[in-house]
Length: 152
Image 1 (cartoon, rainbow, N blue to C red):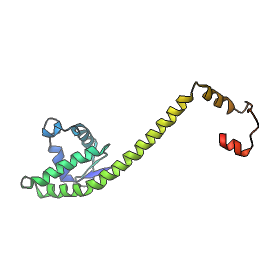
Image 2: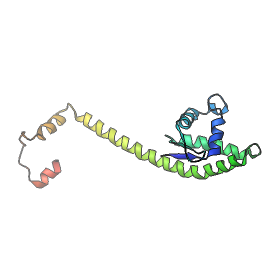
Image 3: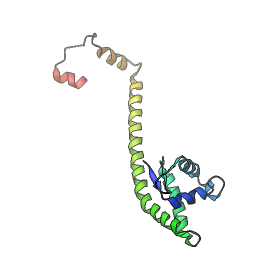
Image 4: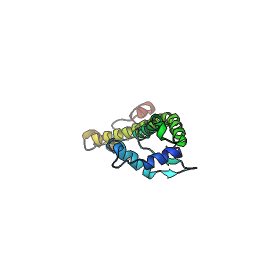
């Protein structure tokens, strides 16, 4: 999912020292810096990013809130950009959280399938099922349609 940061806020973040400044002490600063560096400029001066966690969006929101609390030192464009970001950030954070939860669920399901197949590998159950599923191996007793569906 891509998110567009308004131009004036993107410029403010570019001027902020995320490497050695006060914001660098935040544990989310390295991820935010990497996400911002990987972003591309969109229409106008916007910066289009692909965040990999909601923490990055919350980190940017903290900068937007900083702009709004110190209005006397900020330009009108930065104030508008901060308001726009905070209006959009709630929707973006919710969408990203849902996307990450879907991806996490799929990864967990894939891990369960792999773990399940490894659990029976090399056991009598795994060998017996493997023998019975080959076309040349005879079954223990003839199966009718309903029984076959149960064991398929």
